[in-house]
Image 1 (cartoon, rainbow, N blue to C red):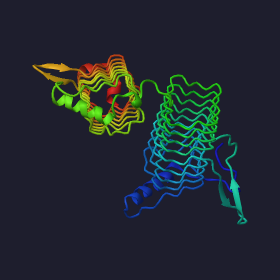
Image 2 (cartoon, rainbow, N blue to C red; image 1 turned 90 degrees about the vertical axis):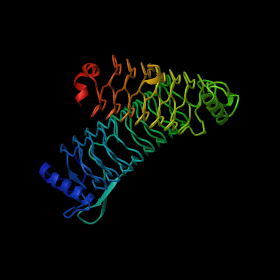
Image 3 (cartoon, helix red, strand yellow; image 1 turned 180 degrees about the vertical axis):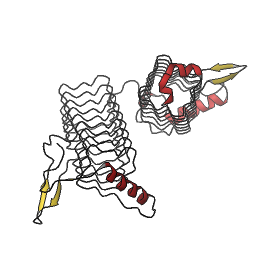
Image 4 (cartoon, rainbow, N blue to C red; image 1 turned 135 degrees about the vertical axis):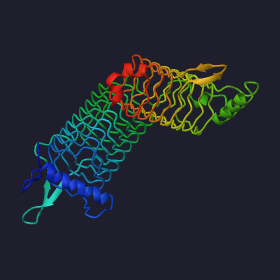
Length: 435
């Protein structure tokens, strides 16, 4: 399938001609002389290279980009209505609030792409024929919209896919909070480890789908077809431990007691102990909260904002903190061994060893933790224990890994640009350290 079924063939342009259009669009985006918005509607761009280009607000409706290289392209607010992206490389592409109705993504690679708020519902496209009559078009040989596409690790927060065809599509590790998937055909799709909190899956076909270890808290699954679906380890609305209702006081009171316990070195108040609790649905703000030395082994607390929180010397081993926002948080000396931290945002986080005085130090432990797709930009990870940790596709740009224990750690597809390393860590990472 390479073009639409229309009375006139698509116009094919060369890479050189395309580059000129893209250059003018860049000038247009910069409000410079000679700029012009890129209008490539119904052009054949198959196999061409648009990688890394900024096409914000461009018009590519009805265009064919089969097999094209769009790695890292920015298409925010653009019109790609009815585009054919068959087998295109869209790794790390951006489609923020983009009109993607009626697109064909069969076999496309969208790993790590950002499609937050994108409209990917079914759609048709029409144009005037030579006689002036309106003609509804459909791509030749069209079988589905995103069958066999790969959205591994993509951000599909609040995306609209209702009624879409996504059979055998891969959404492993994707963030799909609030995603609209009602009545979508998701037969055989892979949602392993995906974050589907608050998603609408009502009346969706999930026959033979894999939802292993997915987060389904608050998801609407009424009348969904779940025959033969794999839900092993999925986090549903069913509690996985004692809940907020089982605490002996409201959480704000517990925080106040803990603050007193810290301020008086344990003479008054009480240490916060929520080990094994399922605290999903917590309404108390934890932004800049004082959680130093808290006890929270095996705690379940997903998708919570902990920005700027003080969490030094805490016990959080085995905790489920997937999707939490922890920018600028202080986790020095905390035990996060075996914790689940997929998609956590630890930008600028402090995770180096905690000084104890008299030359003593308490290391931060992340041994065996899962940090897939975690954001660790500019994080201080000096001396942290990352042995056997999984940092697949994690963003470590500018992070400090000097002195870290990384034996057995997985850094597949991780972003390591500008990472600070010592010789020992560089030896373990090998060639990956230069990427």
